[in-house]
Each structure stands twice: as C-alpha cells, then as structure tokens.
Amino acid sequence: MSPVESQDTPPSRLTLQYRLEDLALVSPWIEMLGIRHALPEQTQFSINLCLEEALSNVIRHGHGHDPSHAITVDFENNGKGQLALIVEDHAEPFDPVVASAAKRDTASYTDDDLQPGGQGLRLLRSFSNALAYEKLQDGNRLTIGFALPA
Image (cartoon, rainbow, N blue to C red; front, side, top):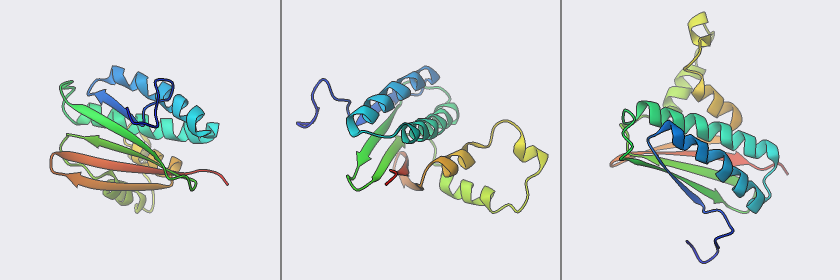
C-alpha cells in the first residue's frame, strides 16, 4: 500500500487470476476508483466495459484458463483530465491495436462480421480515447486511455 492510500481508499492496482469468476472484481474496483477520483458515471461505464472486454479476452484466449498466472490492471490519473488503465498479462503476444486497425480499414462489413464475437476490438475503440500496445518479454501490456469531460 502506498503512503497516499489507506485501508479506506481503493488500490490503484487490481490483480486477477486467469479465471472468468475474477471479472466480478472489476466493477466494484472501478466504482471505488470512481468515488475516489470523482469520475463521471459515463466514464466509469466506459472503463468497466473496456476492461471487462480486454480481460475476458486475455482469460479466454491467453493461458487456457490457467489460474496460476496473474493479470494486473493499474489505474493512472494524470490530474489533467486523462486516465489510463494498464493491463499486463503473461499470455502469448497479441496486439489488439494492430488487429483493431485492420478490422477498421475494412470498407464494408459482411454478415460474418456482425455475428456474435469478434466485436471487442471495435468496442474498445468506441468507448476509449486511446489504445497502445507493448509486447513485454513475458507477455503483453495494453494501455487503454480515457479523457474526462471538461
């Protein structure tokens, strides 16, 4: 626990295992951060939606539901109206930013594109303000940025 945080304030880091049940920890954590940082409800909704999408993909596709690996999510508020959620995992490399750009460059969508599944990258782009990917030596780092309303 950092000196700024007490037992009554939410930690700026959430640690999850590769279990879908752990996604239940995301919403309460975002709600606590929302209170602490006076985040608008719409921003909290967008953060929650993007995090649940990104984390469920890591859990479903990353390590075959191996709960011995941890996923961390760090919350950063630069105090200038910009927030970032940094998701780090130990899964095989996957760059959703490139995959999202490739999907977005498609001029028209077929019925196959509109089937359930495969829309998560579009969702991330729609509800966040910035996405950045970095391949780590033993995993991935996805930074999802959000701008607070003025």
